[in-house]
Amino acid sequence: MSPARIAVLASLGIGEVTVRRRPVVAILSTGNELMGPGEPLGPGQIHDANGVGLAAAVVEAGGEPLILPRQLDEELPIESALMDAARRADLVVTSGGVSVGRHDYVRAVMERNGDLDFWRIAVQPGKPLAVGALGGTTVIGLPGNPVSALVTFELFVRPFIRAMLALTGDGRLHVRATPTTRMGKDASRRAFLRVSVGHEDGEIQARPAGGQASSQLRPMADANGLLIVPEGQAAAEPSLSYEVIMFEPLQLQSWR
Image (cartoon, rainbow, N blue to C red; front, side, top):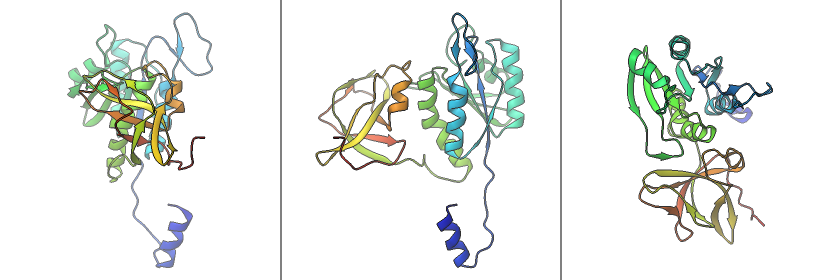
């Protein structure tokens, strides 16, 4: 509720309004290689970007994040953490543990203790995604790769949180934009390319925010939108226009 909206309600004599509780979203990161931000790294270790990144995305979507302690790639501790999270939260979101590796246990826990509605999607980035339930609580297992986790959160978790708040859609501005250069992709999957959208010569254009590999997190931070390229196309072509999901309001001033 903005100050102006509160003032409008008051001017109409409305002193009380009906609200919805923000859904509690538990966030669980898994992986032997993960260390917390600020902690020293040993050989083969990386900082956990997903825990804090997904928590910020939950807040932006209208939820209340509950960051759980990171779990090693061990089946019983992951099972215990997931079952406890399902009792404490309205929605559980995990990162990692849903691919085909020997130590990817999240999907197995969902299959054994609850329901697995679907697993793996034809999306780039973000193929290894699992959706199911534990004890009646929805669980969405995102890929462990930070770019894939953030993109699939945008596509699947953000609309889900908004639906829990009785809001429709993803709440994002969608525009049409023309690429400034050819951007390759996997032709068998629908791609969500990280782009910088701006106004150039009277046209809304999209240029790459950087490399499009799922391991490259910086271009995701520099992007202000996701350009959607359908299945069956091997690249985003400068001769065509595409739908873009905007992360922020479109600035109409020129790039120059």
